Length: 78
Image 1 (cartoon, rainbow, N blue to C red):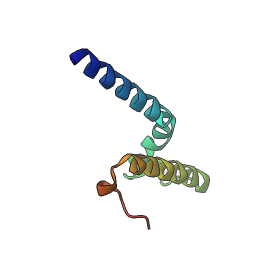
Image 2 (image 1 turned 90 degrees about the vertical axis):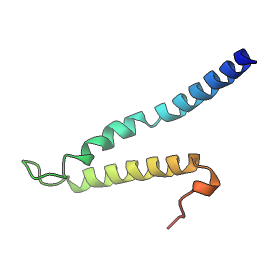
Image 3 (image 1 turned 180 degrees about the vertical axis):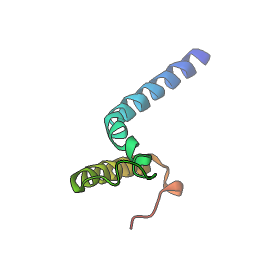
């Protein structure tokens, strides 16, 4: 039974990892915006194109994560 449980666990982990790896590049693209424009410094704000790209990527990632939640934890659509 433990071997079967381990096999199922490994399969689920791999499928989740594969699923999330598709989003890794988006996370890398959006992550700098968490701090780059939060604090005053040399760069004051992103360009309009940078903002649009980051917002679109972050929105897609948010929707993807919400789609993984069970119905009782889902976020109402606006």
